[in-house]
Length: 191
Image (cartoon, rainbow, N blue to C red):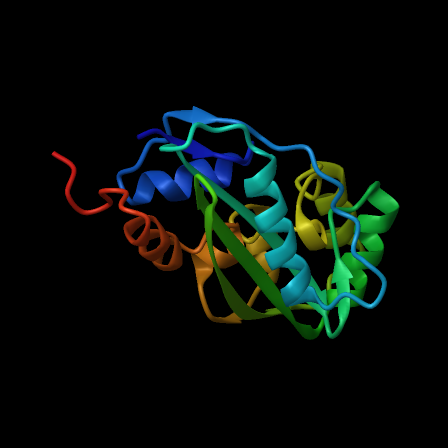
């Protein structure tokens, strides 16, 4: 039985390591992440995690772990910004407001797929022009839903959260451990 991490995210790899788990293989799936018309953030994240898990080539005994992190401002899904202008628009919209971070996990073994999600509330402070421009120049916003990662420079912009810090980072460790245990992966029995 191999554990395949279906993600190229270094944060997800690091969060698995917190559980003492090193995946046997890393295969990042390439899927269309466009939201469907009228799709809400939580169902969107679950759909993407599931589609990613199905897109990873694996043997029948292999366990595939995939996740999707979505930042939502109300019903609006803030994906990975295409450029610095879009990142600035996202960060400005999030400033001074609470938003939701949904991370959905899918674990597949053969035809069996289990899913779970974690929802956290996050408040970002209003950014000054200097803060915004310095952050954008760092390029830390690239490849991150909503244009920020709480574990990086943007952590200084987050005075309050309610929920899972690891979920906001991209892989809620409690939910991940539960799903891996449910499919028979020895999370707590390794020597």
